[in-house]
Length: 209
Ligand SMILES: C[S@@+](CC[C@H](N)C(=O)[O-])C[C@H]1O[C@@H](n2cnc3c(N)ncnc32)[C@H](O)[C@@H]1O
Image 1 (cartoon, protein in one colour):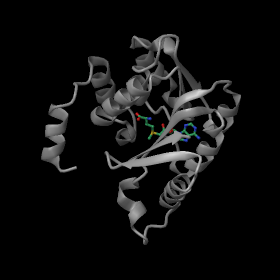
Image 2 (tube, rainbow, N blue to C red; image 1 turned 135 degrees about the vertical axis):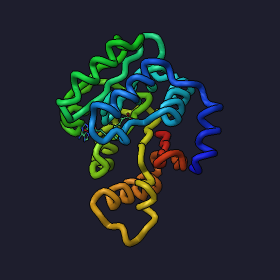
Image 3 (tube, protein in one colour; image 1 turned 60 degrees about the vertical axis):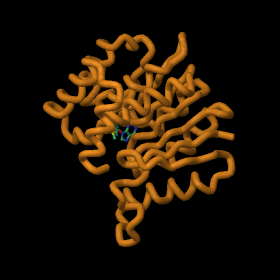
């Protein structure tokens, strides 16, 4: 998005609360690869989608510092729960610090480990799944979560444009090829309806028919 348009869009989008602002700042100061964090616009979109879906159970793959988890948790129904999985145990203390300060702390369950191993052990049916882990594993996550999503439930996958690389036939690194493979697979999967939103780095929204 052009900078001026982005500025205008953010000026006309609900402000981040103080906790999210601090989490954004501290992630940039203390944690490597801060660009991985969802940020203001995407966070508000995730919050809005979550409110629209009104989920009882959410699964997130790829917590990072917890920004998107805090946004998604906003739409949970009373008694709702969000499971979020992060493979990097060095992030655990930082994530817990922020989750515990949120009014949604009791609704967020953090799992530390590889989502591929952890997903089968979570005995839940999900209304909403957010896939935002290792880009090379998107299809594996999709297969792992599919039967745990209720009929009419949603799967959202982030970074499906991969900085535009998916469009360039000369870009054939492992990450780009895996995202392309995921996009093609879900697009032709008759078990889901799909729409790709060109927001930030691209978000694929899937509805299980
Ligand atoms: C793009 S970041 C997530 C950003 C976060 N969802 C947000 O929007 O603020 C991706 C995260 O996925 C984690 N990750 C990578 N592979 C994973 C796996 N197999 N299981 C769980 N987490 C994984 C990485 O360590 C990293 O913290």
